[in-house]
Image (cartoon, rainbow, N blue to C red; front, top):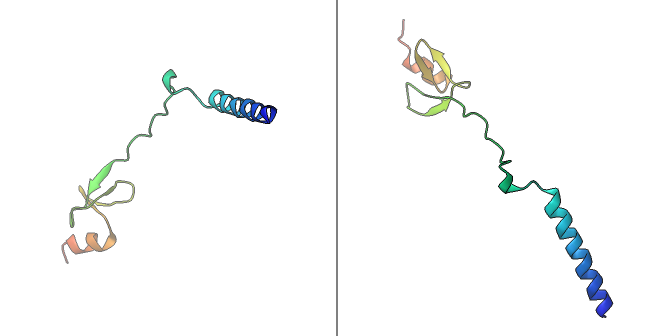
Length: 76
């Protein structure tokens, strides 16, 4: 019985040590840097902030959807 418990403890310690050595050390300063934030613009019609690459520009104004762009456009 004692041998079985001894081998279970040895295997558990080996697995723990292997996992600890395998992952990067947090104290070494190897923290991943976040990506640059996406520029946001405000919809001229409703005020919702959307990513610039998904917004629709018209002059110096930005819109969140085609419907808001058409609602805010002057009718001719």
